[in-house]
Image 1: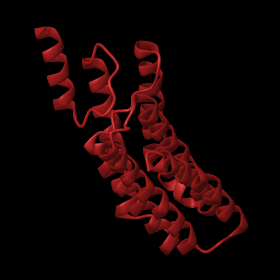
Image 2: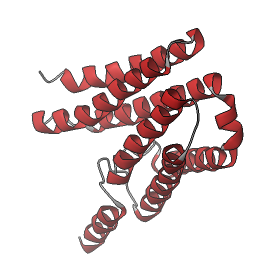
Image 3: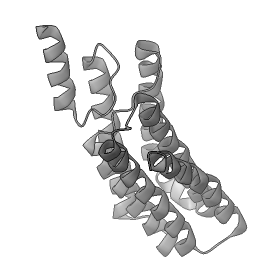
Length: 191
Protein backbone atom coordinates (compact mmCIF):
# COMPACT_ATOMS: atom_id res chain seq x y z
CA UNK A 1 0.00 0.00 0.00
CA UNK A 2 2.89 2.40 0.71
CA UNK A 3 3.87 2.16 -2.96
CA UNK A 4 0.54 3.55 -4.17
CA UNK A 5 1.68 7.21 -4.20
CA UNK A 6 4.75 6.21 -6.24
CA UNK A 7 2.50 4.30 -8.65
CA UNK A 8 0.27 7.36 -9.06
CA UNK A 9 3.31 9.50 -9.88
CA UNK A 10 4.40 6.81 -12.36
CA UNK A 11 0.94 6.86 -13.93
CA UNK A 12 1.24 10.61 -14.45
CA UNK A 13 4.67 10.21 -16.00
CA UNK A 14 3.24 7.55 -18.32
CA UNK A 15 0.46 9.93 -19.38
CA UNK A 16 2.98 12.46 -20.75
CA UNK A 17 4.25 10.41 -23.74
CA UNK A 18 0.74 9.08 -24.28
CA UNK A 19 -0.58 12.64 -24.63
CA UNK A 20 2.17 13.42 -27.16
CA UNK A 21 1.55 10.21 -29.08
CA UNK A 22 -2.18 10.91 -29.19
CA UNK A 23 -1.52 14.40 -30.58
CA UNK A 24 0.92 13.14 -33.22
CA UNK A 25 -1.41 10.33 -34.30
CA UNK A 26 -4.41 12.66 -34.47
CA UNK A 27 -6.52 10.95 -31.83
CA UNK A 28 -9.76 12.78 -30.98
CA UNK A 29 -9.51 15.76 -28.67
CA UNK A 30 -11.82 13.99 -26.22
CA UNK A 31 -9.23 11.22 -25.85
CA UNK A 32 -6.45 13.75 -25.22
CA UNK A 33 -8.64 15.43 -22.62
CA UNK A 34 -9.38 12.08 -20.94
CA UNK A 35 -5.66 11.27 -20.67
CA UNK A 36 -4.99 14.73 -19.20
CA UNK A 37 -7.84 14.18 -16.70
CA UNK A 38 -6.26 10.89 -15.57
CA UNK A 39 -2.95 12.71 -15.11
CA UNK A 40 -4.62 15.44 -13.03
CA UNK A 41 -6.47 12.92 -10.87
CA UNK A 42 -3.22 11.06 -10.21
CA UNK A 43 -1.70 14.38 -9.16
CA UNK A 44 -4.57 15.14 -6.79
CA UNK A 45 -4.52 11.76 -5.11
CA UNK A 46 -0.79 10.96 -4.88
CA UNK A 47 -0.16 13.61 -2.24
CA UNK A 48 -3.34 12.85 -0.32
CA UNK A 49 -2.57 9.13 -0.20
CA UNK A 50 1.09 9.74 0.69
CA UNK A 51 0.14 11.98 3.62
CA UNK A 52 -2.50 9.53 4.85
CA UNK A 53 0.02 6.66 4.73
CA UNK A 54 2.78 8.80 6.29
CA UNK A 55 5.14 8.31 3.34
CA UNK A 56 5.20 11.86 1.97
CA UNK A 57 8.98 12.21 1.91
CA UNK A 58 10.96 15.04 0.35
CA UNK A 59 12.21 12.82 -2.53
CA UNK A 60 8.65 11.74 -3.30
CA UNK A 61 7.39 15.32 -3.31
CA UNK A 62 10.26 16.39 -5.57
CA UNK A 63 9.50 13.59 -8.04
CA UNK A 64 5.84 14.59 -7.88
CA UNK A 65 6.75 18.16 -8.87
CA UNK A 66 8.97 16.91 -11.70
CA UNK A 67 6.20 14.62 -12.95
CA UNK A 68 3.86 17.64 -12.98
CA UNK A 69 6.34 19.60 -15.10
CA UNK A 70 6.82 16.71 -17.55
CA UNK A 71 3.07 16.30 -17.92
CA UNK A 72 2.48 20.04 -18.39
CA UNK A 73 5.19 20.19 -21.05
CA UNK A 74 3.67 17.22 -22.88
CA UNK A 75 0.22 18.82 -22.79
CA UNK A 76 1.66 22.11 -24.06
CA UNK A 77 3.56 20.36 -26.85
CA UNK A 78 0.43 18.45 -27.86
CA UNK A 79 -1.47 21.73 -28.14
CA UNK A 80 1.34 23.18 -30.25
CA UNK A 81 1.23 20.16 -32.55
CA UNK A 82 -2.55 20.05 -32.89
CA UNK A 83 -3.51 23.72 -32.61
CA UNK A 84 -0.60 25.99 -33.63
CA UNK A 85 -2.99 28.95 -34.03
CA UNK A 86 -3.70 28.84 -30.29
CA UNK A 87 0.00 29.21 -29.61
CA UNK A 88 0.34 32.09 -32.07
CA UNK A 89 -2.60 33.94 -30.54
CA UNK A 90 -1.53 33.42 -26.89
CA UNK A 91 2.24 33.38 -27.38
CA UNK A 92 2.98 36.43 -25.20
CA UNK A 93 1.12 34.97 -22.20
CA UNK A 94 2.70 31.57 -22.72
CA UNK A 95 6.18 33.08 -23.05
CA UNK A 96 5.70 35.11 -19.84
CA UNK A 97 4.55 31.96 -18.06
CA UNK A 98 7.48 29.88 -19.31
CA UNK A 99 10.04 32.60 -18.45
CA UNK A 100 8.60 32.94 -14.93
CA UNK A 101 8.61 29.18 -14.42
CA UNK A 102 12.17 28.70 -15.71
CA UNK A 103 13.44 31.75 -13.84
CA UNK A 104 11.91 30.50 -10.63
CA UNK A 105 13.40 27.02 -11.09
CA UNK A 106 16.83 28.50 -11.81
CA UNK A 107 16.66 30.71 -8.73
CA UNK A 108 15.60 27.76 -6.53
CA UNK A 109 18.44 25.59 -7.83
CA UNK A 110 20.95 28.35 -7.10
CA UNK A 111 19.54 29.10 -3.65
CA UNK A 112 18.55 25.63 -2.40
CA UNK A 113 20.48 23.26 -4.67
CA UNK A 114 17.19 21.76 -5.89
CA UNK A 115 13.83 22.88 -7.17
CA UNK A 116 11.02 23.71 -4.80
CA UNK A 117 8.23 21.24 -4.13
CA UNK A 118 5.78 23.55 -2.40
CA UNK A 119 2.54 22.06 -3.77
CA UNK A 120 0.79 25.32 -2.95
CA UNK A 121 -2.94 25.70 -3.01
CA UNK A 122 -2.58 28.11 -5.92
CA UNK A 123 -0.75 25.37 -7.86
CA UNK A 124 -3.73 23.07 -7.33
CA UNK A 125 -6.02 25.77 -8.71
CA UNK A 126 -3.60 26.17 -11.63
CA UNK A 127 -3.73 22.42 -12.30
CA UNK A 128 -7.52 22.53 -12.53
CA UNK A 129 -7.37 25.69 -14.67
CA UNK A 130 -4.88 24.00 -17.01
CA UNK A 131 -7.10 20.96 -17.36
CA UNK A 132 -10.09 23.17 -18.15
CA UNK A 133 -8.09 25.30 -20.61
CA UNK A 134 -6.63 22.21 -22.25
CA UNK A 135 -10.11 20.72 -22.45
CA UNK A 136 -11.52 23.89 -23.97
CA UNK A 137 -9.00 23.72 -26.79
CA UNK A 138 -9.11 19.95 -27.27
CA UNK A 139 -12.89 19.73 -27.24
CA UNK A 140 -13.75 22.88 -29.22
CA UNK A 141 -10.66 23.39 -31.36
CA UNK A 142 -10.09 26.93 -30.09
CA UNK A 143 -8.94 28.77 -26.99
CA UNK A 144 -11.12 31.11 -25.02
CA UNK A 145 -11.62 32.31 -21.47
CA UNK A 146 -10.66 28.99 -19.84
CA UNK A 147 -7.33 28.87 -21.67
CA UNK A 148 -6.63 32.50 -20.76
CA UNK A 149 -7.57 31.78 -17.13
CA UNK A 150 -5.03 28.93 -17.10
CA UNK A 151 -2.29 31.30 -18.27
CA UNK A 152 -3.20 33.99 -15.71
CA UNK A 153 -3.47 31.44 -12.90
CA UNK A 154 -0.06 30.05 -13.86
CA UNK A 155 1.51 33.50 -13.72
CA UNK A 156 0.01 34.16 -10.27
CA UNK A 157 1.10 30.73 -9.01
CA UNK A 158 4.66 31.23 -10.22
CA UNK A 159 4.86 34.68 -8.65
CA UNK A 160 3.64 33.27 -5.32
CA UNK A 161 6.20 30.44 -5.53
CA UNK A 162 9.00 32.84 -6.42
CA UNK A 163 8.20 35.13 -3.49
CA UNK A 164 8.06 32.09 -1.16
CA UNK A 165 11.50 31.08 -2.41
CA UNK A 166 12.75 34.60 -1.69
CA UNK A 167 11.28 34.52 1.82
CA UNK A 168 12.47 31.06 2.86
CA UNK A 169 16.09 30.70 3.92
CA UNK A 170 15.99 26.88 3.81
CA UNK A 171 14.39 24.40 1.41
CA UNK A 172 10.98 23.08 2.45
CA UNK A 173 8.42 20.88 0.77
CA UNK A 174 4.64 21.08 1.05
CA UNK A 175 4.29 24.78 1.83
CA UNK A 176 0.60 25.50 1.12
CA UNK A 177 0.85 29.26 0.55
CA UNK A 178 3.04 32.34 0.79
CA UNK A 179 1.51 33.00 4.20
CA UNK A 180 2.75 29.57 5.35
CA UNK A 181 6.22 30.32 3.97
CA UNK A 182 6.34 33.59 5.91
CA UNK A 183 5.17 31.79 9.05
CA UNK A 184 7.86 29.12 8.61
CA UNK A 185 10.53 31.79 8.27
CA UNK A 186 9.25 33.73 11.31
CA UNK A 187 9.31 30.58 13.44
CA UNK A 188 12.86 29.81 12.22
CA UNK A 189 14.00 33.31 13.21
CA UNK A 190 12.30 33.02 16.62
CA UNK A 191 14.35 29.97 17.57
